[in-house]
Length: 226
Image 1 (cartoon, rainbow, N blue to C red):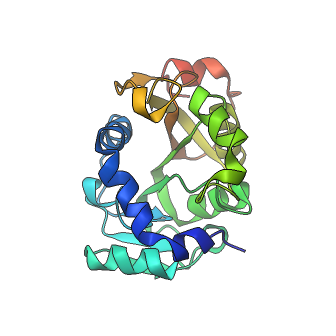
Image 2 (cartoon, rainbow, N blue to C red):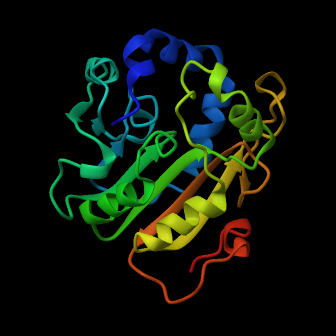
Image 3 (cartoon, rainbow, N blue to C red):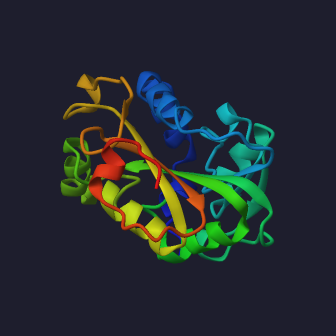
């Protein structure tokens, strides 16, 4: 079952978070932008209200929450209702897929990434943006999850775990960027660095295809290409 209940109940609170934390939101956008590949046809999985799709010119998204889909459509996004584990999209339909702060809400992250692999064209790219569980903020979110309106049912992942799942799903060419350095939202530093392991928000880019090389933490930290 998709974890949409808080997004159905509190869509305005979701939007208000970004309005209140514009500096943090802008930093997340910039981290993704540093990894953005050239593309002609993109889609966001878990498009929400369109906060991350629109800055990159993505006008199509998949979203299970009707309330979120309504907000995204109001902004001009074509929303397909569906879940990440069974994308209602044809094989090799897009050359770029974006998924931001969604992997922590899906029931089966590996199946979701396999579905993304399926809908990508050969040599297409995916970028996964998420809160790194191993960061200071990620640890706070994990500890206080039961008290959170939106993250109560979330499962957080580390950068190494997400990279490992991407590899299992058939992706290679791992690269990463990070931002939001600090222990609280009020005191975050918002520069963007290569790699992972420091920032609360991590974006990982991967290319459709398999690599015979083993994935290691160093590949994440130095933005090398497999």
